Amino acid sequence: MADPISSSLQTSTEDFKKLKLSKDRIEQWEDGMRTDDSKGTYEWWYYDSHLEDGSKLVIIFYTKDIVDTNKNLTPMITIQYDSPDGAHYAEVLTAPASKFSAAKDTCNVHIGDNTFVGDLNKYEIKISGKTIQAKVTLTQRVTPWRPDTGHICFGNNNEYYFAWLPSIPEGIVEAEVTVDGKTKKASGTGYHDHNWGNIAMTKLMNHWYWGRAKIGDYSVISSFITAEEKYGYKTFPIFMLAKGNKVIADNALKYLNFSAQEEYLDEVTKKPTHALLIYDYDDGNQHYKITYRRKADISRAKFADSLSPVKRFLANLLGFDGAYLRFTGEAKLEKFENGIAVETFTNQALWELMYLGHAQK
Image (cartoon, rainbow, N blue to C red; front, side):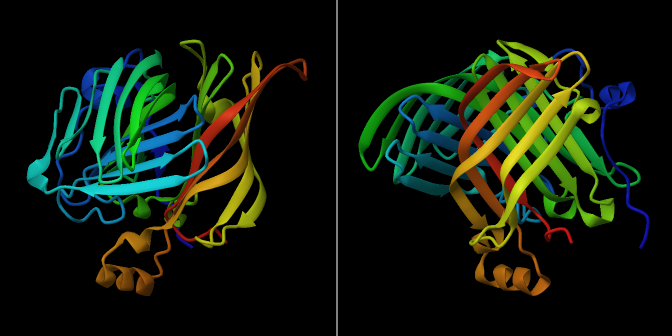
């Protein structure tokens, strides 16, 4: 077998300089449009929230379907709302390229009459679907953050990349949601991030777990990315822990141990999945453990099902079986001193498993 192709999180001073980024601050333009809509590129702006009435709302603005990035601009929005009584609603909105616009100096995205606008401190999102309409205000409570440059590069010349910016790791939400003509207002906690790249993720990554939670006075973002086979299934742990509005732990490459336990085969996607995830961060001075315990699935989908019949046939012929699962459950945070848990908090959480390649053998 050939040696694995290089892949790495860009962390050096030269990497920051090349990307025109600062180690100490996030600029508004970083949440603006970062790609040029050309074939291979993709971009999305993501929002999720847990509301105090028990409901959950997820909204994503895309430049194109991330499964089929070889097309030009084909804007779309996905909306998912789970009501307090457990009812699940989902909708996909599309618009012609002429109805898309996005600023490069700040987050100001328009798809048809739907908008995602903000300045790293406050965001307003408005969507109007046939079944779901929503007006959301998200106000920063934890300052913007990224894992070093936020760019994972692939290839011996770093020619391909996947980039990620958690623009609001945790914030206050005020939402007005209308479903089937019935309107509710609710407050809660929310999150916004921004992702982009220059080649289909299916060519770079095998799968990832990603999650975030507000637990007591703490906010956590956690991810564990596994590259594709030709990159040696290299793993990239990513972790941010904030207390109040201050980040207190984020050197995942050095100090994080990740464990996925209680494996089972998901019946819909046929992917190996885990009911228990553990992110254990210990830098010698502070030791925290975040545990995600699955309670329910709120999304389970095979990517090929979203393709046209012809492309779906070709995908099946080529053996493409990418899948996406979104979970809800309980997140527990434990702080240890001298091996003893001195703080323990629990709260509801939202996390996902993105499967872009075949299950590892």
